[in-house]
Picture 1 (cartoon, rainbow, N blue to C red):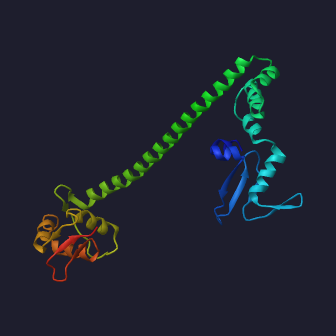
Picture 2: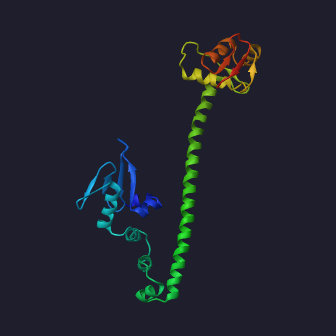
Picture 3: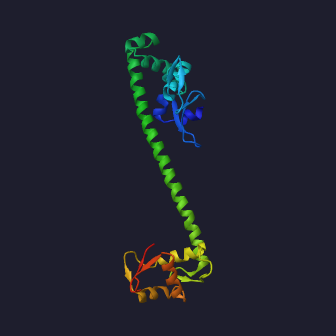
Length: 242
């Protein structure tokens, strides 16, 4: 349950419960942060002869079984007993004078405690913002790492299938297996030699393909057949699609 509290958002902490979705049927589940009690959003619950929905049932559960959310959060805050007592009195609405008398401290000490708590709250907001930025940065780095991994695999494919990358020279081309992953990789690599949004004559296409592979006509036809390039019905113009 400690993990539930630590992972909860500010709003969830203030409510005293979290709302999750059950994977199997997407049903919303209300879970108490202070115990394992759960209420399903689609169900109706009975409370002292009244029918209540899951949210209301959860709020009533917290009030009856755990008391104030404030007190429960305070118990998990890691603050000193003196700080806890001060915040409880502060939360109850007591004046500075009343708090000073109850805690046997001066009114100036109470004012300082109020100021100190506000400063800690500001610091906590900054730390929370930094934490979220760190998490976002970590997600970005993970995303980049995932992108880089296929790039490494692509480099291996290039070394295996092409004799040279610059200039691009293909080792061989399998005419039989039309669904072969290597075949698609070869065509994707070759079509990148053409510019987007540019029209080519058949001669220009051939001139680009000839240095890549001796049977350039088969490569040209495959680029068309697999949708990597388009052409007019009279074969006068070609263009890159992918």
